[in-house]
Amino acid sequence: MSQRQVLQVFEQYQKARTQFVQTVAELATRPQNIETLQNAGVMSLLRPLLLDIVPTIQQTAALALGRLANYNDDLAEAVVKGDILPQLVYSLAEQNRFYKKAAAFVLRAVAKHSPELAQAVVDCGALDALVICLEEFDPGVKESAAWALGYIARHGPELAQAVVDAGAVPLLVLCVQEPDLSLKRIAASALSDISKHSPELAQTVVDAGAIAHLAQMVLNPDAKLKRQVFSALAQISKHSVDLAEMVVEAEIFPAVLTCLKDPDEYVRKNCATLIREVAKHTPELSQLIVNAGGVAAIVDFVGDSRGNVRLPGVMMLGYVAAHSENLAMAVIVSRGVLTLDAVLQTESEDHIQAAAAWSLGQIGRHSPEHAKAVAQANVLPKLLRAYLRPDVSEDLQIKSKKALKHILQKCVHLEALEPLLQEAPANILKHVVAQFSKVLPHNPKSRRLFVTSGGLKKIQEIRAEPGSALAEYINTINNCYPEEIVKYYSPGYSDSLLERDLTG
Image (cartoon, rainbow, N blue to C red; front, side, top):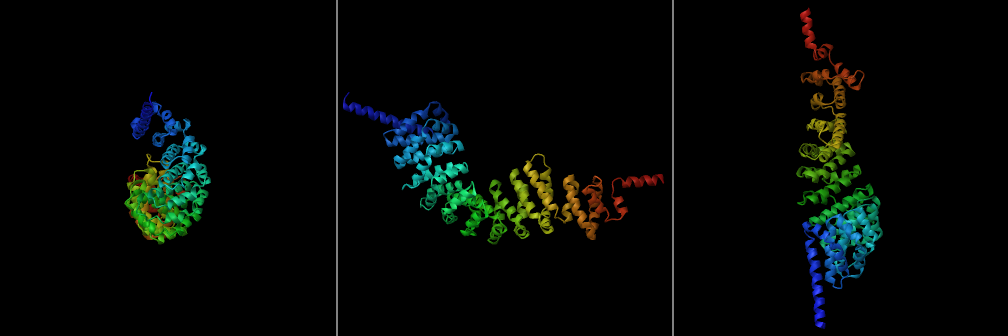
């Protein structure tokens, strides 16, 4: 065989390898092909090509493996069992930037599925190699590495700590400052994934100077970047008062409130989540948000949103109201009660209704004035119905019941309480009757209206256990009226009167 023929054979072999990996990489983009590729044993065919002498074949083989591993955890598991990860980690240090991006993609695709698979990536020594990639000149390599580190960190505090221990956080903070927009997004996302697990991990991110750089980007025109920035700041803020105060000290208010009207719903939701996480800690932080116009902005946001997007706003109103009478009144003045009432009526998801019920309870529990504001919105019958419905979640029933009790124990607006005399079960009824027993002895006008509205008649129809609290409340009410009136409205009185006349 001549030298020319030998070269032709090698050329054909190279073309065949190139065509094979390119075809597999293309086929792996379509879900309907995945099972066929898996059954054909494509993993074992791709593995040797990671060591190919031709760089483009190496890169395309890694890309194909990443797409397969990304599809489901079975294929990701096959990558681990095929002993492919050590070769990828080795290549991260040795190969060119194109291969490094592809190798980091495979590591990310494996790590994303479960803590066990993420741990397998860590166990093969990937963290040190990925952190070194964060120092590369090429922004695409940094982005791929940051993405993989974020996917490892998101699974749990131990894995996030391993990422921190590898020295990733200061480099991720540097990546946030890079001009490349895509790199900024992924680095912010990775910082969010690290921060979410514990105060200690969040503090590590703060100590690296992340807050100042994230805060500078809250009004960036790029929606995808803002999503990640708000997510990271919310994950930092949620853990403690100190961390929330550090975020606030970066002077994000009132600027962030404009993002509650952002066209991107995830920006709006993450922004509302950040405001909720700050507000929940102390009355002082809530007051700062109120002073910046935050409650009115959140009320508008809840009114304009639907479904899970509005949930953090619903909860934020409850957290603010829970802190003090004045803050609860700020929610009332901003028409928060009417907005929460609309959520309770219009949302089909139980967990959103439950959040609205909880928030209404936090508003109404402070004083008769607060309870009246809630009761006048006709909220009480809706809470009662939510509590009594057999087809709703236990959480919605519990939160509706607690909210009812909180509001009833302060409510002296008798007009709003009367409809409950007919519908409420005994455990709620005693709270309703208790409020009448507090007001009627001291208010002649209310006593008269209570008779003419049919309230006294309803009281006589209640069957209470002798000696029970409910029986005591009924006796207190009855003692406000002459005995003849009480008898007149008692069940069976007209029959006994008629019988007396007939026998007489």
